[in-house]
Amino acid sequence: MKTIRYVFWAVVGLLLILIGLANRDFVTLRAMPEALGDLFAISPDLRLPLFVVIFISVGAGLMIGFLWEWLREYRIRAEARGKAREVETLRREVDQLRGEAAGAKSDDDVLAILEKSG
Image 1 (cartoon, rainbow, N blue to C red):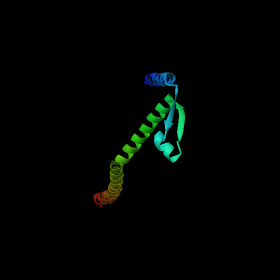
Image 2: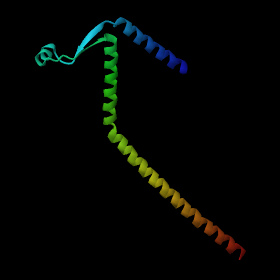
Image 3: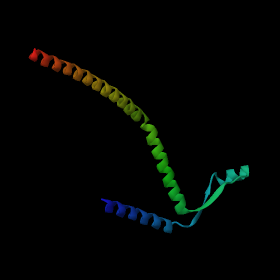
Image 4: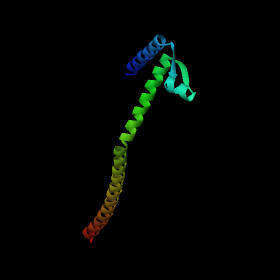
């Protein structure tokens, strides 16, 4: 199983290297359209290799998806915590009842022995 995992990650790494080599030309990223930037006299641009832009975009998409899913599952996690508390309460109650039953049984056993000998 570890071999399959290593082969998988080696293939993923090789694909990432190939994407990086195929897309190493520089691109300009602008925060706003050129006409709007000229109007306000600010034009924040950034020049990066295309593969960096691709990888950052994929990473940002993954993080947004993970955050969205985490927020969506909040209700499920809260319900599971409530059920776990309920189970723990019931477990303590069962243990307490077993202890009381064991105490009553041992008293009965002692009484039974005394009645047999008496």
